[in-house]
Length: 372
Length: 240
Image 1 (cartoon, each protein chain N blue to C red):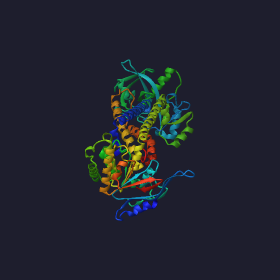
Image 2: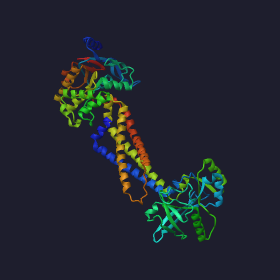
Image 3: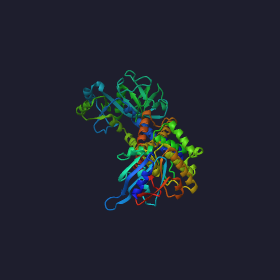
Image 4: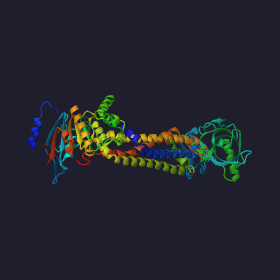
């Protein structure tokens, strides 16, 4: 540390410039990570935050809930193996509603579940979902931002059915739409209205079955339930429209940012180390050990990256507090810690080339370098 | 020629402690048909409080001599002992430790670290040697004062004159209280007055602290400060 800090003190401009680059890269890493998380939540939090480990969907539905349709018969077959508790029917449908008395349309994702089952999310405001309260739904807090309050009535655009918001839950959206949870009776009413309007089929009761089962039971279910697939929760999440495309492009950016920061550091320290080869030779001649000198290079890498990370995290947190609420941005302490850890690891990797260079420097270079 | 060196070694009073001893040292570069013998059965010893100049034409092997005496290079044949310890069989780490504690190097063109202030140059080598901090600070103060650098202790090397830089280098070489001081053309980048100045101070310190000093040099003007002058020719040292 003795050499590392004094060199930074002496060559301020040089190190300030590299810290500025590192700072911007780390800021971008954190910002894009927050955006990726936020977008991920907006598309999938309703499914991600469900305590289910597997789902049953219709075969050839591409694992998409919206495309999948399951009969009451299939629900019974699944419950025969997984138990009534282990297999919960789940209805998912995207629709457009208006708040009664207003014109503005709001896109929502309807989730039909058995009230009081483990599928129903926790209520943070108002009344929880109950079997008894007909027409009363539990809505995601995002809906509040569209002006919907507890006690407000929403009118479905397709069927004309009316639902009253009884309570709010949080962090439940699906495909960028706030999720609205209703009990099985309301769901059945909605379905039959919808079917009547289409004049079509009957008894396509639910879209999926949420499961809490062991892997062995999953295999059993695969064989037992006809015309259906058992998929994992992560499969269900990545099948949500838009989710994979968003996440993979953002992930690519993040990976590139890490690679860039590794290279920037590697080049910076390598060039500086090459400039200092003669110095390292002298230091080795007067008895400094390779370990000490390599430690000094690593200490500089750490000081610079910790410094730029600290400022980067600070900036991102300020940015976060200033972002408009509609912006999907989510960055928890855990994610920040993980990103910082990764960034440090990558920075150290970048310093490696210089360490090798230091190790290869020969103390003999110090003697007679200029004549003698 | 060889017996003359031996005679010179024996002529020294037995009570004087030998700090640096090279005996029968040979060094060759290359292998097979093209072998270049740089040092050929060279012997030399330097006692405490003695400053010896080694002169010789370019390519006479002065650098190789200094590298071997400075525990940077292991000779092909022969034995080196510094501060009474034989270097034979030491590994890289042990050699680095020995250089740190027993040898003070003064290089051509001070070769100070550009980002350390004068006193930090000294404290740094003390740190490398894991010396006690308070003691190191006292030692640094004393050395800087003796070398007339007290006023310049807080200056970076680029704010010091050439002579001051080389004096800091002398102080750095003395910092860890080594047995041997090795100087590689210390006056090459200085004008005559400053060169003499630095050499005088170096001679003074070598005597006062009982070091064995070797100056490898081209500079005839500083030879008067040295106790003995050895000429390196054809791989051997000859007393002048």
